[in-house]
Length: 183
Image (tube, rainbow, N blue to C red; front, side):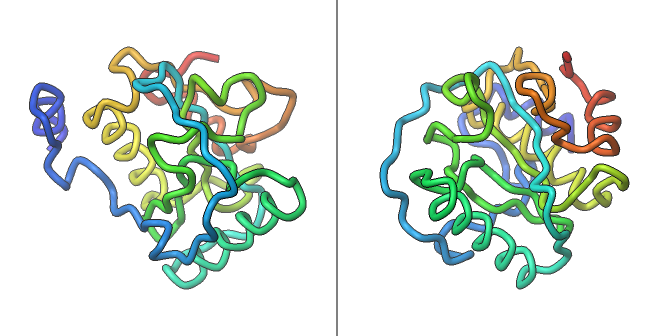
């Protein structure tokens, strides 16, 4: 199937199996954003985060987590919307944040040139499960095949661009082994 996905880079639309299951904003009950800035794509960077909160392993628990994060970002941080472009649950699903076409608020100085993907949970002392890791890899592949992420993209952890321990030591150790990672 990875060969199939490589082939789709030459085609217009990727087959659905190249992209993970993406739960839309309306499906998780998002509030409307206060404002939006269009992201100029394809961007050259993808930045990996963790939310440092509770893990979620079901649609119901992940929806609840994502709603809580949006409320925190909008009400406490005073941002226009949830900060991440997409969030990844240990239920194996991806949750649409700001999406493909909107500048995020996830990595100061890097938002206009990157997509921010955040794993739901705290991965300082444990790794995300295989379902979440596979969904993230598929999401990166999907971003490239749909033209939102440059084919020559660079993968980074949040700690590589801002002063933070994000995305946690256990997750960071994993993404360092992924293709196109560069600290």
